[in-house]
Image (cartoon, rainbow, N blue to C red; front, side, top):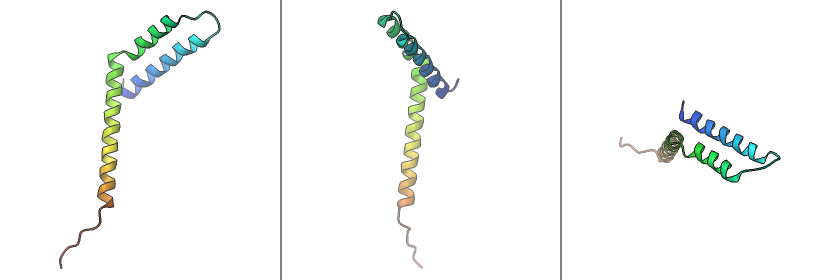
Length: 79
């Protein structure tokens, strides 16, 4: 499973937990929090989020670098 798939899976499972919680009837806050904690405290999810964050940082740095390069004035050469 890719990093994006891990994150998407966690979000969808958490949405399911929250959807169950808001259904009419008795609610158990502690059980809901325990389920959410189990989803978000997963080491694979943490690693996936870290990977996606690093990819975003690298992309931003590459974009920033290309902006500085393209914004530089042309160099003069002696004839």
